[in-house]
Image (cartoon, rainbow, N blue to C red; front, side, top):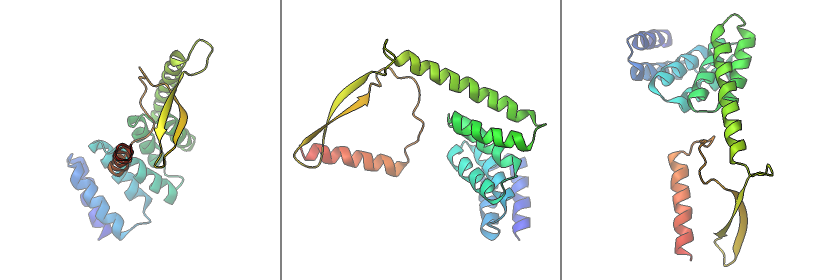
Length: 186
């Protein structure tokens, strides 16, 4: 049954029906949760759908199940590049390149990561002050108690680089709730 579902998923992928492919791979994984290839294939379908975070999760699971599965490292690298997580992408791609030394896709993607990392580094250097230290801004943060705490945060005015994390919907809710409580307790 799992083999049948996997074959149907491959056919859906070839037909560019990536949503169906993800669904069929998911069903196949439920029947055979120790099959690294299924996770790697679902990662590829998720990449095609633009579901890069899910693709990284699937690639990580495939790597966990089979550390020698080259396509899992490639898919993790591609998804991380799309998420602009260049250091993580490069690490995965370097492992994949060591396993498949004749595959030029790894070298090309590693070069792209190196270029992006260099650009990020230069952008950060441009944002620093003349003495080489990043500028900071003092911010008052009201705690839930009566006292005010002082903290120093990096000055992010004019910052062009993107954060290296993604807030999930529940994280945004918690963040909004925190700000609401701060306003209510003023």
